[in-house]
Amino acid sequence: MSEFKGRYQLASSDIACEEFDGEMVVLNLASGHYFALNQSASFLMQAVLSGQAINQLAAIDTLAFSAEDVTRFFADLASHDLIAPDGAAEACPVDTDTVQSAQALTEKPVLEVHDDLADLIIADPIHDTDVAVGWPAAQNKAA
Image (tube, rainbow, N blue to C red; front, top):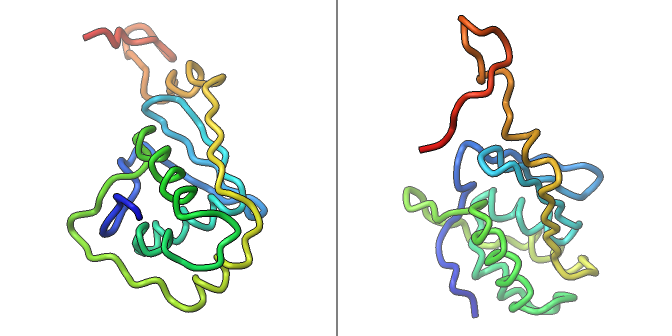
């Protein structure tokens, strides 16, 4: 079954997501990577962000994809630091509407990773300022 138990949330405030025509784009402002989620992945992500448990979503019968596909998708999200356990709240049980909607999905959940704009996204010219130098001024981010 699924190693994911309980409720999950976005891993940090540096992560933003938006749905466009049934598909979702997730942006990690800290890494500069962005991610494209197909319709099935978007549905699963929205269900989890609304408080439903990943292991219960993976256990839904008669999906067009396997429980392993669901678990693999969420493992991919976790490996990119997009989701993390929410220890402060309990997961909601998967409701009938979610089950019916999940059963209507026709493709495996897919997470596409894009890093071609990472340097531009990380640049953040609004915050990389220096009063003496002007705007924008790249700050030394070496530790």
